[in-house]
Image (cartoon, rainbow, N blue to C red; front, side, top):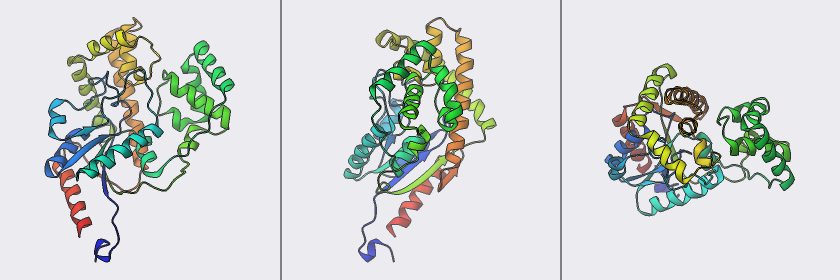
Amino acid sequence: MTASSCGAVQAPPLVCLLGPTGTGKTAAAIAVAKRMAASVINFDSRQVYADFPIITAQPDEAERAACPHLLYGFLSADERMTAARFVELAMEAITCVQAQGRLPILVGGTGLYLRSLLSGIAPIPEIPDDIRRSVLERVHIEGPQRLHAELEKTDPDYAARIHPNDTQRNARAAEVLLATGRSMTWWHTQSDHAPAPFDTLKVGLRLPLAELEPRLTGRIDAMLAAGAVDEASRVLVRHPDPEAPGWTGIGCAELLDHLRGKSTLEQARALWIKNTRAYAKRQLTWFAKEPGIRWFAPGENQAVADCVADWLAVRQG
């Protein structure tokens, strides 16, 4: 006897398709959408930026035509996205999709965003102005790399997730530690509300890092062939501030240095590959600690679709 047959109200279904960069999550999501009425909702912190569709590997026109896609490419490069803001936007998108009678599929690789949505995080207190000013002064004098080096000692888990050149996130971590005496990792593990009201299926795509590496290199070369440098050049005209949040992403930061004459294109490419590999490694580590994921290999799209269909069938009794 199912919960619904007893009169209990089932929580609405939510599918989360996750995994490290370069594992083909978009293709797997579209395979699911071809089997049932579904909409894809992004939870990748870089694919929110409208200025970088190539460099952040956002779904192309053909992929977007296969089913509705939400929360992709809507934010300007000079705007900042936070976990709290993502949760607010994602809840709105999920509610909208469910009201249309469609299945929401969260797709991405930003583990903090997913955890924040499903488990909640405590709001960080307001930072006093004097502390914020002192940290920003340090950034301007010493650079974000110095703050990142300190962060590696005080909060290695969070340091591993952000780029040394990311001015905003390194400054944020420093000011939060100074103001509260607690690290960003501590705050991110504190929940101030009940878990999200969904019946959630988590499906993951992954490969051993050694097998994933050539895929990542090929993906970056494809981005360069598709016009990644020209894309970055156009954005630099509109957003010349190198500290704009959109520039802090992997690929964006390396190409920005190239365009500013700090590296050759080959050097930028090599660093882009290196940093992408390091990011994928961090993602694999993060998701390995996430409970209840049903894992598949890249390309097993029909098996992923079968998994979702079977899960929905069991729910419906």
